[in-house]
Length: 211
Ligand code: HEC
Figure 1 (spheres, rainbow, N blue to C red):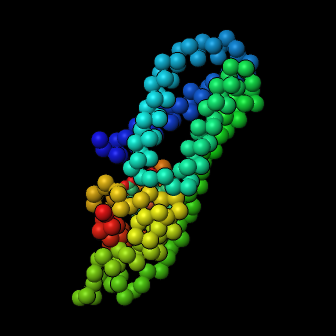
Figure 2: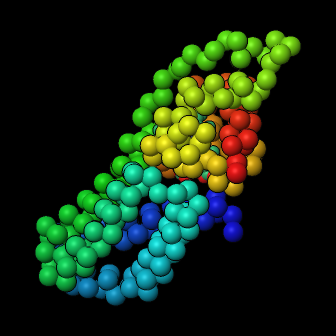
Figure 3: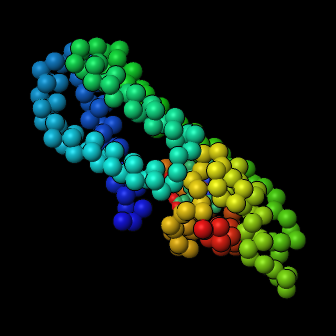
């Protein structure tokens, strides 16, 4: 199965999950008890499908990108929010219902937090000069990597703080170029700070890290 397709399904499912949750919480907080009962009944089956997909795609992604500290905190938040939500809705406890919703939103926010503004770094001009007859795209890529990527992805692509393990990435030149330029749910895109040559170089370098 294609990782990007699974991820897309995961993101859609998470959004649907959040929408259902938000509507339920609003109905509960607004004391619309019969409305809540009707809505809960209507979404019962879709919700079961959504939760299953949420879990299955999430686990698949976890096996592919490895668990970073941030991801573990996210997972704990989501897992904790489930029993809190169940109790909250069963006992019609507004505080618990809102709390569980906040926990889910927070875990989403944690992912966004990782996308801090990227500052332009200086890359050694000895390796970045394409007109130099000794220009080596991998060396150039490595210095771009050290300047921009290593903080999250770690030395040599493994066990960084919060980034995916790049040595097991299944991406190819094209999809990885996309990822670096546009980012993803938890990684900022670099198209405004890196030029085409730098993007190419860093992708060529990262592809050499594959086990
Ligand atoms: C602020 C932290 C951070 C920085 C800086 C960062 N990344 Fe990432 N990167 C992540 C996270 C988190 C993921 C997992 C995201 C996901 O799957 O949506 C990721 C995923 C990736 C992936 C996808 C791996 C896969 O197979 O799913 C690639 C490739 C990648 N990063 C390359 C880079 C490169 C190249 C740079 C530097 C130009 C970089 N990253 C900088 C956090 C970062």
